[in-house]
View (spheres, rainbow, N blue to C red):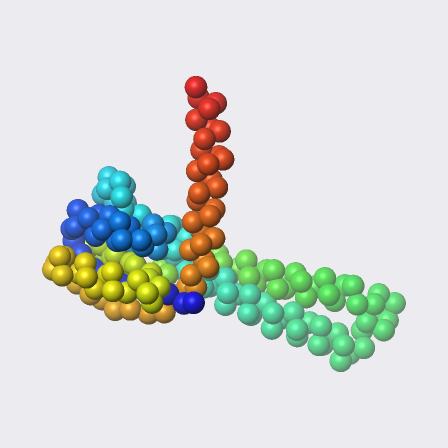
Length: 197
């Protein structure tokens, strides 16, 4: 099941923190809500606000996917040319050509990710002006059955500027992220606290 991603722009972090608390009280999970802002210290000072992960701020994933697609095409070209020229029937066989295809695929994927580190996330590019003005982008990714929760809360937050929606990731991503964070909290954080005692 796909989620629906909602974008809101605001200049009031206190109001955004209150909205996040209200959403969580009504069953929207923490990983479904995050804030994109150039004021990282301001967001960090609001305990209940999730700052957008740095991986989401730049275009690493999207550019890496484009690099992987380019690498796949390159790998197919390497294997195809080797096959058409009859090179594998020579003494060496398929091993060097398959290895070269893997190297081409890996290099293109890696290079795509590096290029993505230098670019803002293509989903958030339209908010560069608002972010430069010191505003914050509040992002909520909701399942279809959670939509009424947001609608009921928006009336109490009249200063939020609605800035569009788009299809978000599948719900299973949040389930996995929630499970992973819970596991980290239970196992890794508790062990480090025991060491400090």
